Length: 184
Image (cartoon, rainbow, N blue to C red; front, side, top):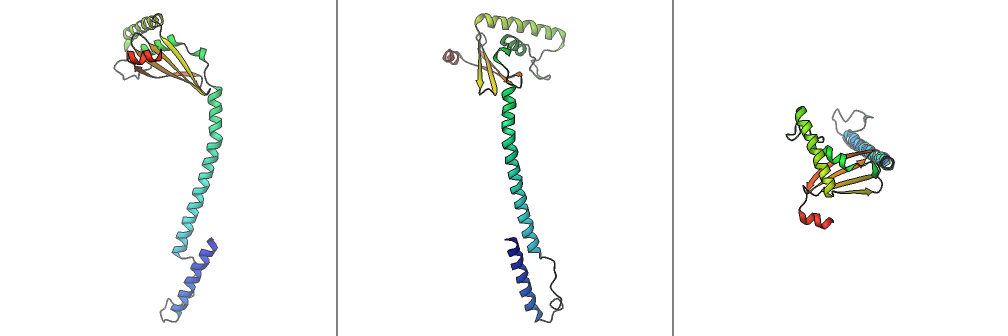
């Protein structure tokens, strides 16, 4: 197709130059140049860009086709087991403020503040265990796991994500008594 377009353009230029040869202008007396016209250059640039875009799209699809199963296998093979989740220990970490950023106003600062936060978190975690906090672990196709602890005294649910051999705290959400009774 490209050769046909180039041939048509050069034939049109040749015919236009033959018409101009009958005129007495100095440009008409010069032989036709062997360089392609500007229109030909633009057409070739657009065609080259289109071909490059198609090649990149194919390469991108191939990379995705190979990377997605590899990532799935990696997540499947590094998914933590249910017995690696220690609810009381994880709850203590969250309650003492370990997961808070350093500039957060609720993060304990100094030796005394950190010690008080540890004692308070230990007491609250033990009280939650005695009150019957509910620990649930949901397995999502063996790739990741979601663990939740429903704290009955503070009416808060805490969520962790288990992937790549670690449990990571995600969020805490307050729930009302109506929502709590629906889950029981």
